Image 1 (cartoon, rainbow, N blue to C red):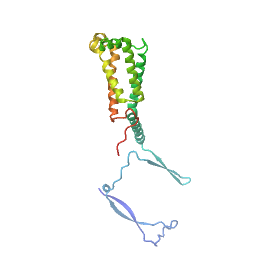
Image 2 (cartoon, helix red, strand yellow; image 1 turned 60 degrees about the vertical axis):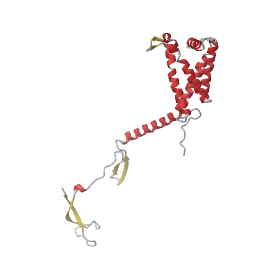
Image 3 (cartoon, helix red, strand yellow; image 1 turned 180 degrees about the vertical axis):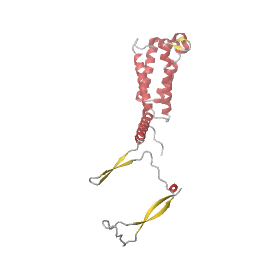
Image 4 (cartoon, rainbow, N blue to C red; image 1 turned 45 degrees about the vertical axis):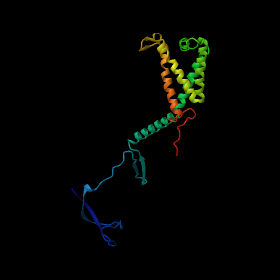
Length: 241
């Protein structure tokens, strides 16, 4: 409902009130009633994260100081914004360098394991690899020669991945090698499984980890086609303008 508000009307200029002596400029207002509709008066709502102004008045010197004060929810908003920015930067960094790190780590593993096979009795997979190569070559290659060729093969894959040279040939050698490493699961199932097919031995676990290498090779092959940063660059390709 409208509520009455009392407001004074000003006395015309030039007419002084004889009852006022110390404040000559003060105007005396005649009392009248003005109706104001309270429902029509709307106050804008303040945003939650807006600054609040705290006013301090020094009564001795008559100095008024306004001090800005943050709203209670502003700190949470700022923390959430910082977390979002950090996540976005980390995501951009991963998108730019994850494939490069994958290539280098995969190349390092191949180079390491390949060099071990050049020295007798250093590789834990030497005995299984020798038997597998003897089966695959039908006995035409001497075991030690076949093992040296396998070591050279893995070393070449590792160097190709680390240096980023001849990517197509490197990936072709990788996939051919991975296909050969899975054959003991079918050639010697009783030796690589304690209980076929759900309880692999340590040798079988050594072989099954090559599934991860195959997946990594697929990622590198896709990056070579331009889907992600690949062999020769560490940043995402820029869109054509």
